[in-house]
Image (cartoon, rainbow over all chains, first blue to last red; front, side):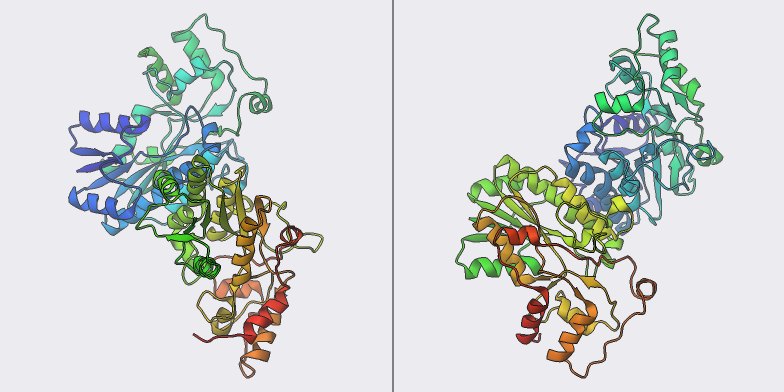
Length: 289
Length: 289
């Protein structure tokens, strides 16, 4: 029995679909039925349900974007930093292995050698480096709350996208924003992300942190070129001249743009596709809302 | 009707005594009777109780000292950073003025000009400066969660002491530790702290942040000399040779030692005594456990 927290969210729904399609016995737990923000009720649920694994896809992302986190700091901290620690405690008390949806947004840029950040690189977009959004700060603190934990996967997601139009889908956002910021990012196809995360458990790869992003990186302009090619040949996309202009005009808080190295995940044999291929396939199968 | 959160703690008990002695109608709220870590139940309590002011003396300090916070990061974050944000939200919804027990431990050392830190100086012992204990990091985040809030006092306490022997009393700790670290600190007489905090509300001084420490600063050696003079003439106090030795041998995480400037508080007319005088009076009235 797999317990899923945050099953009604964008990422959680994809986990639910994956488990349902695979015929895996699971239960999506709402906070109404179990207050999983507390150790005791969550540990009791784990015992009662005879859970064999738990997936935490709950968190606070801010709607419509991370700027909202600046106005609701306590809820953001509770959802992204405290909750993982509470789940850790409940899972340690019940000896339950589990996986946590973390984020690559605790990095900015690329490594000094030009490569993507590996799991061994300390976050460089966090409270500790004092250059981050409140959202990124809380996600990095969430990883700190899991430091030294055994029997847990930290799956780092980055800018999810797939072929279904949605306010949370990166490919939808690019079509809807009035102006775009050109930046280089590693990003995660949502279906591939949840499949890879689940495969970590199914194949019993070693616990620990994994960058679960598609291989390589893309620039906003590259993705826009693919969108024009596949979906909107006549749409004029407008770009900010610089990150400075973007921050001045359109954003309250800095954004993480970063390149991730997924070779630790790939070395386990868990499949993940090249990022341009993944974007092209999503656009080829595009389903409007 | 004054609502008091954390009334069973070291600082909260002092508030309770002060209000009781002054004949002020108040209610010490336990988490059993009201889950004040949630906005809705707390806002409902505020309305039902027809509260006119709220005092938050609840927080997570770590027992026996801040090293414990390194092992319970989620609870520390929840108690020190999320809770103030939750109380803010409940008080804003109900238009209730309130006061929060914050801490001067978000600073280290003294200002470059040799003076104490004022309320305008940004914390220099926090996650943002990446040199702090987890405890201090969460207290600084708690202040961030209150940034821009109206109708709230942030009363910064530092190393509480008084005349009653107790594991939380600085003067007791100095007598019990096997070895001491010599450092210069501003510290707060507990009774004077709660009296000054309460006076802020009673006298309707402007809302905002106040360093509620006794005037001036003391070194550990100065306090030890006063203890020897008054209480333990024959006791041999042993000191670490350096902070490096202290951290290597006795501590898991760095301590805040700092000098605070309390002139903003004093300018309001709220009384607070000179620190050596306050220590001497406490030792003169010393009550063993």
